[in-house]
Length: 207
Image 1 (cartoon, rainbow, N blue to C red):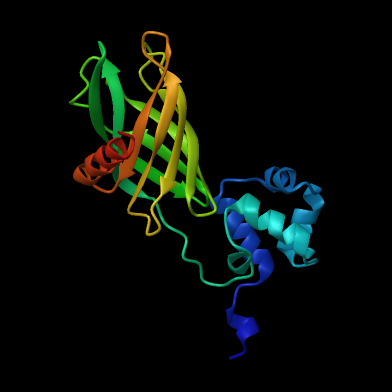
Image 2: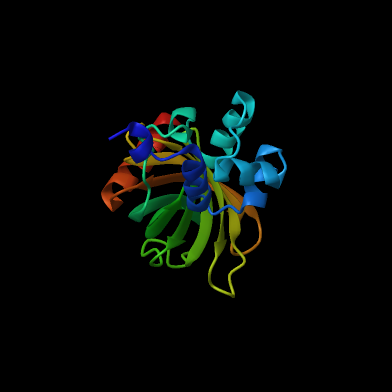
């Protein structure tokens, strides 16, 4: 059987990646800086993008050029239940709060939601949800906001992902429950114990 009969065509690949990323044709076109009709032509197989456009397409979709061309990718999957660890402070005392979180990945976009309140941070612990974007297979950047209606907390997250995708370390910055802008170390890992180890290691580095 000929390879052309079994291998997905470029139009099919770009459509699948676009849908996985949760983008409309217009949304992808805007991210790349081209007209929507160009995306329609690419997906229908009527036209192939120039190299510069293909590079911008790959970047907007969070994939490599090879993956855009149909090569098997090794993108890290961040679905399932993970654990977060947060450095926070109550009455001037440091608290390392942990929470299980649910991750749902669509292309380079990851929805994140706290599944339980933190048992270590009874005063400031709350449920929250947010979104992260994976850049270059290494950086996770995004935002969070409290899911509890009477809690004002919201802010940003920045993580550096381990090469094998087992954990990430970084920092959060946000509006605290009582008003001031606060910040602290943060960790994301597949187990609670690993998240605690990661954040403790970051503390040691900064001492």
